[in-house]
Image 1 (tube, one colour):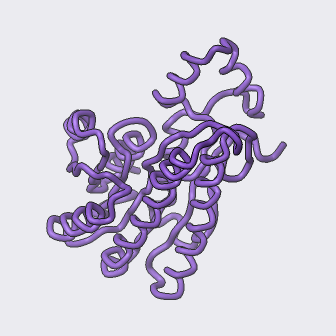
Image 2 (cartoon, one colour; image 1 turned 30 degrees about the horizontal axis):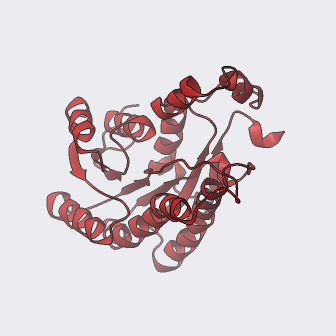
Length: 251
C-alpha cells in the first residue's frame, strides 16, 4: 500500500532530523502533503530539499509563531488532517540538581509546545474533518528514572494532556482524535551522540539490557507507529498511548 494517507495534510514539528524527519519521510511516501517545521533553519532547509516537502521555521514555544504557521497552512492547503507534536529536548539531573531555569526550559519545549500545537491546530483540523493529533511522549513519561526529573515530568504531562485533548475532541467533534506515542531508547543522532560521548563506554550495552527485545528502537519503528495513528486504520483509537518499547514496560 502506498496511499494510506492520500490527500491528507500534515504538520510535524522538530522534523529537520531524527524521529520527526523519519515520520515525515514515511508519511510522504504514503501520499500525505507534509509540512515540516524546526527551529534550526539550515538543517530544516536540507531536510525539505531531501524530502521534497514544504517547510516553515518554527520555535514551538512561541504562541504567535504557532498562530502564523497554522494560518499559512490554512492559506496554502485549506485543511490540516495530521498534527505530530514531536519537537522536544532532553534534560538530565535529579530533583536536587536541576535548576529552575532548566526545569522551565524542558517543560516549555516538551510540554507547552504540545499545548500550543493542539490549541491552535484544532480549529482547522475540526473544519478539515478526519483528523489525528499525535503527541510524541516517551517511555520516560511512564517509567521514571532518578536523574531525569524535568524530562520525566514533561513527558508524563504530555501523556495526560493527550487524554484531555482526546476527550475534548470527542465532545466537540467526532472527527478529530488524539493519542500519544511512547518510544524507548531510539537510535537517533542525538541518542547516538549521547552514547558516543558517555564516560561509561558500556552505556549502549546497559541500555539494551533493559529492553527484552535486546536492541534499541530504530526511527522507522516510531515512524510506523505514527503512520498507523495518522491513518484511517486507527479511526476508533483515541485517548490512549501507543507504547513502542521492545517490551520494557512488561518487565
